[in-house]
Length: 460
Ligand code: GLY
Ligand code: MN
Ligand code: MN
Image (cartoon, rainbow, N blue to C red; front, side):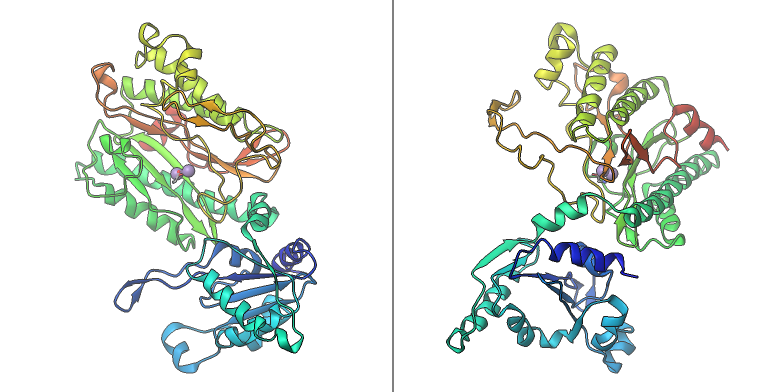
């Protein structure tokens, strides 16, 4: 049986054009300090094509489908310190590549693979010094032109092909993402319940206590890492969009915003929940929460094959803007009608990020947000906030298997124009959605979003 990785390599090879050669390095190891490294994480493109997670590895794919892997050689001494290596001898059977060499042979073997080919494909602007390395190999090939060898004369960005392939998730990827999402959802439940339980017991609750619960749940289900730095934000900290889990006290009566998701077998999940630390929403908290929730419902309804990537955002903006008028955070006297609020982006002081991003191996996954072939087809328009002329960018048409987040929010800084009851509230609700023919599948709903469900779960 051909592995999914071999299928992907073949699909990529078929797009390289006659004489094309693709070069894909994995990620480097990165020093944290002295001789301690950051935990190693492979390169996503490389993993997509190999499933191989060792460092110091390269994949070369030729247009006719021949594949070559370079990997760490077997080395008893190093393996005692760092762990077992697959090694080039075992690699063809284990990974289905045609040929494998020690990575120490890279500079000798790579020019040979480029001889008499036309185009070198590699990921542009993703690996330090890769362009210089490719130049070096091309120089070696060119030195042999006198011997009748021809040298590639074109370089192409491999990301353009791989990003499109990665944008639509196959059944294996969707299954992994569902499992990652389920673990993350249970981690959120655990953090919510811990918050209420510790407060009921009169304990000092800190943001890091809830972070510890998230990590515990991620790891005990086999997740290798958090997919990104977790946010655990007590009270006003929720209004800092890139806040991290720090040491602030979590107080009775405040909201807590947690944005955290695990990475499982190379795939990310990304969930935000906002909940009352003690398990019971106050009136103003509930009003603002329900508004964000309605906006999220609208964005969910707008997500289906054939819709555009921007449709969930537009749907959320409409609900949020109307709600800001209804709750008095914006006023008709000052901001005009709903259409005025939308046109002039009067919601922007409260909602300054977008509703969605692609999700996959990377939390902000690759893939163009603009529909191919439709860029630059409409006239430029002035941005209402800055006056800068902006080229409208017809957003991507959604297809089954694309995965995106739906994450509207509201963040209220103190201001004389805003009722004081809402000051310092920061609320975001984020779920992960797989696009289907008729709608979308929310894969993160093992943690609830409805007010009554959150209160019930934190009571028990
Ligand atoms: N956690 C990153 C994001 O929501 O985009
Ligand atoms: Mn997100
Ligand atoms: Mn998030």
